[in-house]
Image 1 (cartoon, one colour):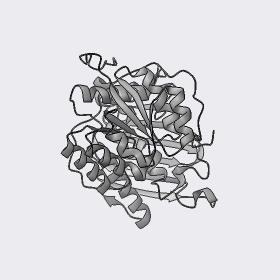
Image 2 (cartoon, rainbow, N blue to C red; image 1 turned 45 degrees about the vertical axis):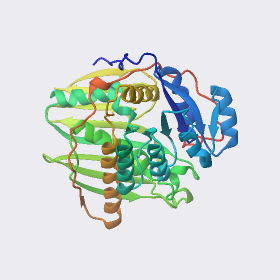
Image 3 (tube, one colour; image 1 turned 90 degrees about the vertical axis):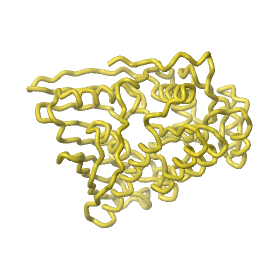
Image 4 (spheres, helix red, strand yellow; image 1 turned 60 degrees about the vertical axis):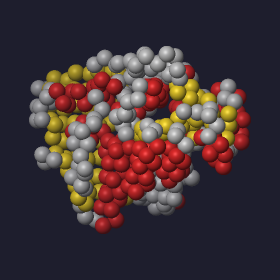
Length: 377
């Protein structure tokens, strides 16, 4: 698989971004990525933390900073073309709709929103204002995951029958992922990766889901579950299962088992570092490594190219809505203790190797301002 380059017919024009929300991931991954996104420019920051605004604007040479109360001023300033929304999940809908209403394009972190209704509001606002909406599924541009799609669909492992995944980490008490009011929880935060991977590997949508949750009696799990396990039934009697946890050692892996072989990915969902394939067919295993690269730079490059070339982003609002619908069904299953059926309108767009983009890895780790990783480091 060869990573393709975005369109080069932009006459040097760059899409100007405001980053909205300056938490850990925005500081660690998004802000440094603009240096490797040649068609994208960071021009504004939005946060309610004056220290973040002062120090980060100085570090990155940003002239325009705004508080959340001044968000509308940012949108109407004429300084930006797009926003990257890295806010807590419960604010995604409001800040997307407000941007769309001012004709500003939106790249929104996943999960797209907390409810299906919010997702639909976001889609309607962007459609009615003629702006692009992309949900930040960075793995839809990531070479190792796209190569996995290619392997599974090529028939090398026979007919794909089973998907299984484990994604876990230790999350400290007080982290926003532990707060129910802001849309936290294992399924919304990390389960969405497993759900989405099963969908792009099977190239289909689940029709029924079942889930269970478990928690140790620790104060940090007073609002959201410590862990959740899920089973998703796909058409043609295929099953996908996964477990996600905020209270276990760090893991990030999935395996697809077919009638003639299997493919396993280690560090499958990571936003940085090497990802490895282990392909086993006929008892013989092949190992392949995919080197580290800047996944956020690839994401900005792709979305900017969609704007400049007037192309519809593949990980669209429709993609985000499907995952939120599945997450809500899984939580209903946990609450009711029964399987829950899901109806889908159908989706033909899937990530393919043709949209793989690779950018040089970020150099070093930036100093964080009033922010910490989920594990507190």
